[in-house]
Image (cartoon, rainbow, N blue to C red; front, side, top):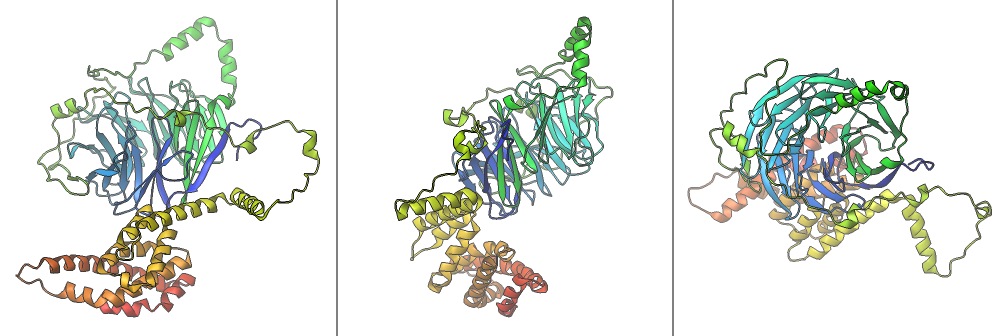
Length: 612
């Protein structure tokens, strides 16, 4: 875990975050005390750091979640999906603010504008798009990258945005003018992360395993300032401290800190966080978040306890004449700073003139309100509209409660203490006073050594309790929907297994709800889940298969029949899901493992013939 001698870092908690693999996560930008995670289960979960129980579970995505981001007020969460659809959720009102479509491939990076309801998205389709969430439209589409866009960030004053790509480049774009300002930032490998200095016109770019460096760029002179030596692993995320004095980099089991001019390594701290995905600052502590399969780990690094790494450059600097040191100090602090006023930033002269703004697209991408689509318009926002949109506006700051602002404390076992004489004496044998004491002691030992399992069981119990509160023999649909939305596969299987014994509870409505959950159950490595999925498919095919086939294949008459139209819609939905599941069943039967045997023994393929 952490080093017991310096206690500079420790694990806050580790928990099962999703019912399927976690694909992405993001810490809140304000104080790092809130976490959003997205997974293969097509859900977004919002957590308070340190609490393994989700504050909010958001469903409604139609494909796996590939990226998440908080807005500046931390009351909105944006989620980008594998299909290219983006949804913006209001965490306070627990509703979908907007559904946005426009990308043709997975959305891999997101960032909110500082002063407005503006969202930027980068995709595998190589496009960078700006969206006005309130006005339901695409503001502009920036073309220029040749591969997937990995990272985005608006400048602190909100007038520029930087994008980083697998094509080994990073580009700075002017939002008002709609053109690229600086695109000469070439690297020796894919650029994985970008961050602006909080005050100065300085940009940091980081690269992955092919290059493993951080480069600092002066945005006033449009030139490279310095670069760090290569690290041992690819850099996964970076973060400037609040003052901009140190840039922290997160890589495999390692945290490093660098100064900018020159680029010197001042902190090196091993942290057992694995492949860290996000770093945020909370007071004088850093919060790091990583994920592996279905689990998320949260770590705390106390910056006050990090050991400053002295090197030869510092010794030489101390020996320089006072006049030379003064000159260096003035030159390093003379860079322009970001402007936080209504006055537009003057155009920055580069060594070469930037290219003209790209032509507007033929149509404005459509977005939807609460899942719907709005009518497309004939153009993107014009230049004057964009300038008005990015003008300074007073920002509403939501201050977190005091109890969440207090520093994290290291766990008791990490606190070093001087050995006492009693430490070397054998501990006296304590006999339990009662059976209850013995049970409590056993439970404590189990929880201590099996924290992950206990967390999974706690999540399962929570889901079952929620389902029980909605349960009704007359209408089990609310209980089933609640369990599925909570995203706990084990609780879903528990409820479905109970319902399998009561066929009178099943209806075409229940089949519509259950069939989307069957596919991930079939692909599970747990035999119990696969067996449950097979039993559900058998029940649905035997009970509703003939009805689905007849309804879908019968031509629609000229007479209006609302009941039949409603039934036809449900049957078409079930028919579509069953055909997709049928292909998965065929693939599973071709495999040679225990899961394949379970599927073959269920005789599912024979029952699927009812749809032919």
